[in-house]
Image 1 (spheres, one colour):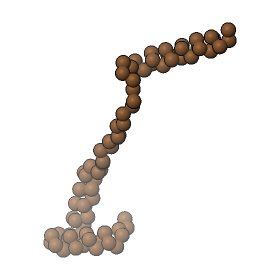
Image 2 (cartoon, one colour):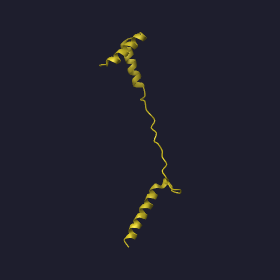
Image 3 (cartoon, one colour):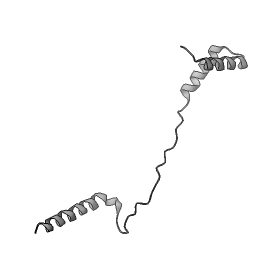
Image 4 (spheres, one colour):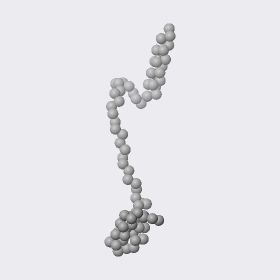
Length: 81
């Protein structure tokens, strides 16, 4: 294993301050890092007004879409007369 010079220096300094071995400080740091949970940020989706008409129930979106499709089919059939 090869450590970056700044990491090795920080570990040596921690070992000196604690009065323990380099190996002990390194193992403790690795164990701590493996136990740590990754830092996550809560994702928030910004909400915006949808501009829905009063009386339109968006819980029935498929039925609403089917109704619109039916109305468009009838409109096209009327144009062919």
